[in-house]
Length: 162
Image (tube, rainbow, N blue to C red; front, side, top):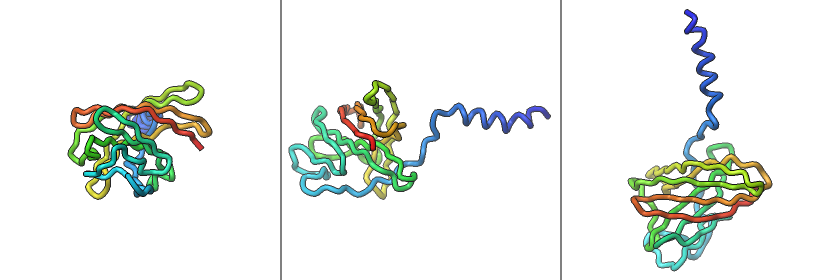
């Protein structure tokens, strides 16, 4: 009998121990740039960022794009999206094996490491993302490392929180 009365309290205690309840996968907005936006089969020598505030860095034989985006389906919350491109500007496909981490360091030196999630819904562009726990009005340095089907992509990016 006593276990029945403790069960609801145990559920609350377990939930309180969670550092963050992970929101559902974000809806990625449409790319906003024109010109040499990364597209499969493209010929650009270096892709242009496809999103406002995005950055692209060379990584191995390809590129890694970073974009701070607002999620339409999670109350406008900002998420960090990463798009790896190989030398032919192909991105990860829905059946790709993708793992990675993002290490975020703010201007005060506080560090946060997040495992990157890979979401490959067939109706949209596959996205590798994380939900950062950000404090506003700080500058963040992000070091992302992704492994896509055995190929490693790495890059350093900056983000100014609003």
